[in-house]
Structures are given as C-alpha cells and as structure tokens.
Amino acid sequence: MELSKDQWIDTNYYKYWDVLYHLSCNITRDQNLSADIVQDVFVYIWKNYTSLTIENPKAYLIQSVRNKSLKSLTIKRFDTIQLEEAYNALVDNEVLSKEEETLFKEQLLSMIYCKAQEVLPTRCYQIFILRYSNKLSYKEIANKLGISESTVDNQISKALKTIKTTLPYSVDYVIVLAYLFNVK
Image (cartoon, rainbow, N blue to C red; front, side, top):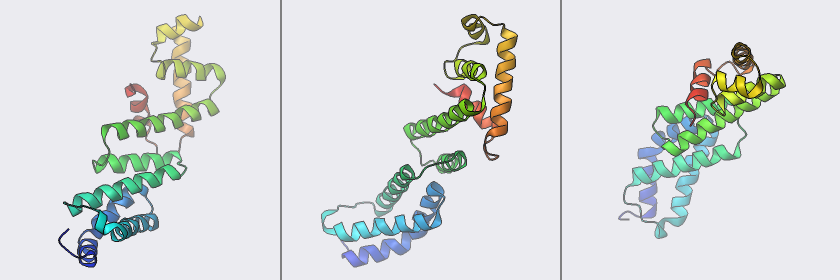
C-alpha cells in the first residue's frame, strides 16, 4: 500500500466511517456494538498493515465490517423481532447472499415452528407440520390421519389464527404465511 500506516488509517477512517457504521447498525441494530465493530476493523488493519494487501479500501472495509457484524449476530440470542429486523435490513441493503437469505428464512421458520409447538394442541400441531413442513395437501393429510378434509381445514385455520396471535406484534402475518408457503 502506498500510504504510511497512519496516513492510510486516517484517510480511510474519516472517509468511510459513516458508511461502515450505518452498515453495521443495519445488521446488528446496536449502535454501541456497531461503533466497536468499525473500530475493531481499523485496529486490526493498523496491527496487520504490513502483511495486508488492500487494493480497494472501500470494498475491503465494507466486507470486513459486514463479516464482523454478521459474526456478532451468531453470538447473540435472537428473538423473533430481532431476527426479522436484521433480515429485512440485510435484504433492503442487498447485503445478503442467496445462501445467507435462505439461512435467515430457515431461522425465522424454525422460530415459527417452535412457537407452534408451544401453543398448539398436539393434533393441531401435527396437521400444521404435515401441511407446511411436509408440504402435504389437505387431502393427503386427511388420508394419512383418517380424518375429513374439513377437519384439516379447520385445524389449519385454528393453527394459523393461534400462531398469529402469539407471535410478536412486529412479525407481519403475511410474511409468516409467505415463508411457510415458499420454503423449499
């Protein structure tokens, strides 16, 4: 790198700090943590400056802050609201790869299934899983369990209504249904 270590740090810190901080905030939803993450990235560069080859400082810094921010999320325990907010922020900012987007959807679905298991009666939960996890039709579920299709329909309606009322308010019911129907 052409600049001295101090010049490189000063130049890029002042040039990109705002962008990096906001990127991290969009991922972590934690201002203090985001400031620490940006600072840690610059400290790492300062300590390892002579062994690094950074051709595009902006791209390197964005990727480093993004990775460190995402890594910080694995340490935190999420509730459904935090997971949804993080997912929406990442998708809105086109920060997620397709694999990461799939992983977030799977984590949200896992939370929905756990909530369903907590709040639904056993038979209702069984029908819910057969429908949304196993992707069986009402007719297939009815045949498998030896019940009528109208019973399956009633149980699915009951399950969705119960889940809707027990999920945190910020989880959009339409998003929940879209995830349930679109999971591969």
